[in-house]
Length: 543
Ligand code: TEU
Figure 1 (tube, rainbow, N blue to C red):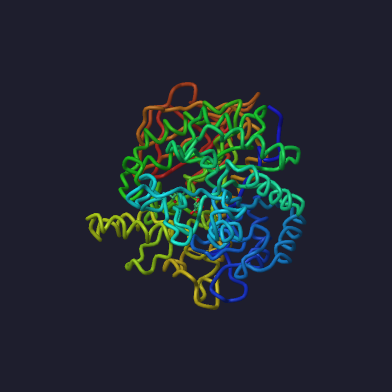
Figure 2 (figure 1 turned 60 degrees about the horizontal axis):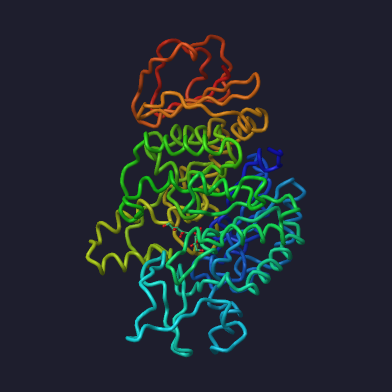
């Protein structure tokens, strides 16, 4: 496998709306990000993925783009964007843009043209179909945000297709003009000096609507190969596809180097294990054995001929320490354990803003406090179908996307230092205890643990390229593994429970005079036949 700069990179995801508000309009912005580049550099990351900052009516907080080559006013200007690129560049930080091309906003000129008449040249940029003879939608396909995927257009008397909100019409990727426009737009951004793209719901662009196929459509990989060839293929960028429907086999199609598609994809198999039958509004407890099996499968199957991206959370998902750790008694220990567990795996790790200080889920009391369109839509759809208010509020507390979107906690001043205006969404009330200022002042903070993990990745090729072997495979509370490359053998062990555990250690792992690389209680320098682990204890040693 040819070595790439992004193999040992660590990416930090920013949700600009909630990061830092420099002009006190209550919404985070590009100048806010620029002012924190040194903070991010100090953490050790070398790539920033920005959730969308393009012009947008913000129906889905920017995942509904009305102009791909303009910056949303609330986030700043194109000059600010150029300054961000320059300032990041000075610090050897690359900027990855979020590329949302499955759909646009209904305020994009392409769609305004498209909906103006049936014979407009832009009509075929989107997906239009006649009503059934009784006037109903062409079929019963559903939107991922709830309700029908078809919306009736009174003016031209046809339905258009939208997999997300009705203000996010799907582009028609069968139209080569759409492909050309997107490629040209991507090249425009590449020429500006960006470091790559995160491709939003990219596995949907090969859809065949009339056959009811949306994910993993037959034309998907051909479209990506063409995109690669016409845009970033010879540019050495980081490209990561968001692919909810990927299996390891599919992930290899995207990420095997000789296929010339993407650097890597985000797979979600470990995430949806806590969703009953794939339904996030029916959360179920984590079964650690299943979780281990899934992660192990991905490590083993993508060992060569593919590349993993590693993440526990993002702007759509609950906070990791609340979901997989214990955000009360063992918040610090479990946040560090989860970080160690992920950052010693093979792949490119992603950190979501606030993860490095152990930010937690929020539990707003009233539905109105939630701003997310998915949360609002599903509350309506499900309660109308008979689900109780209590059930939905519990599910929202568990899995609403707004868990990740409350403003970043910088310090314990008003609004956690995020804004002097009125924040667009309320803060998590725990900011006086959990904030950056606090973290930077405490040498034992979660922040410094992440900093250490990033340094270790840069210093130990075994973390980046080594083989992966699971240990204690049948244990239902411990996730342990070995990473090995040439002479170096690293042993990582993580207690995922709030119980103290005693393990019988196989002889090959019993060693004296060990070098402990990282730990969240005492450093471990010897392992004998029994190993005692404290709640959420984890460490990595060199065997
Ligand atoms: O997410 C895709 C997506 O399917 C999510 O909406 C996900 O299904 C949901 O949160 C889980 O229930 C991407 C973006 O990450 C998301 O923020 C956008 O809303 C969506 O695409 C549409 O662009």
